[in-house]
Length: 238
Length: 288
Image 1 (cartoon, each protein chain N blue to C red):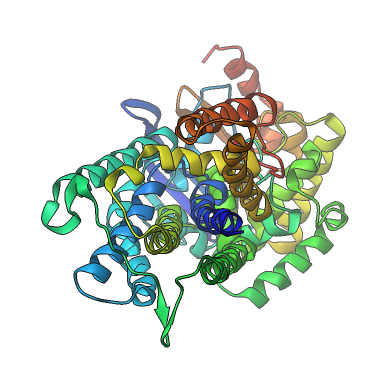
Image 2 (cartoon, rainbow over the protein chains, first blue to last red):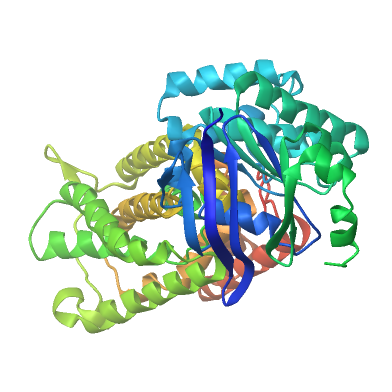
């Protein structure tokens, strides 16, 4: 029986006075891939930002059964990594330097170098570009770098926000394959916010469907794919 | 020959000041306009401690950076939360306060009359009284500041500063407390600027509040923008060019008083030119 790794209880959050998500309760077990789906403005990315303490929220975030104070510093130390939308690599730093930045909380130079070496093996495309500036990489390579940077601290939970945004179908397939490999080989749980539903659902264990800042359905990936919930949500019927 | 020594000394002093400013502006991307204030604090500390307390200038080379650093630490603690133009306005406010204090705290600063008779540096009985000896002292300090600047640039601290310049929010995701980094580099920049201030005060032997206005901060910005932001070589080249170019006007027949007035116009024109046609500067790789 898998243990609950992260649980949200009645989470509400937004920007300034505007609430985007209302009373969200969800969970992810150890080693699972969970998808957050829904149309633009449904609040998917806001959930990830609230978990990671990047925006103010009410309600509770429980990690390994205990209530936690969500701040990036504390979450990184607990084993949560966040890969933001838009890749956000540091263009004027090399691939290797970007990874070292990701390993900041390791606070150990030797361990940081070991992790860089390990990730270079895991992502051969990055190994070939290790001393090149991140700004010179293609969109797909930058996304791999962004994911690899998130893995520098050997997290237990990876929060991925739109990892395939703006990428070609071939690269999208590779990114999802990478996510599945990371999940299976390293037993890292993944919460992924994504628009490419048909590519994502086959690799997810469970999915939550959101509309207007609330969860309107949750089930296994294949069950969600078979139902008409996504069609109704995206057509604005809910 | 003395004129050439004078130019080398000015290039060294402004090289120190521009490198200090570059750490804050070029490496961390903080648009600080307070460079002249910390330069002035260094000069006033040297002048006050040397003329009123009889301390040697060499001693003030250690004291001034500490005092400037402490002041930067205190004000920087509140400035570190600001970004971009807010940070620039806050640092401009600090420069204005510094100018007002130096003009009006007459007991300490002698107000607008300034402080004359600042002694030359002296160590083990040797006085740096000749222009040539001052050239060696100023170049020595420039080399030290250049080494410090390069060490910071190549360290993990320097990388974090570069990342702050590019995307501060993205850096926070990895657990960095970016305000601490900004405060640290602001303090280091202030301390190094003060070093340039001490050198300047003991070289010119007279200071007054008009020497440390916003014009000086703009000159430091111009040196960085022209030479190339975030590049040590570029910043030094910027200092070299912006000291030499106005001096060249003397040789094409402009009278000294016109050269003084033209100086600010040249700095302004160069800033506009580089912003329009080469925003990365001569040797730079980053835009402002």
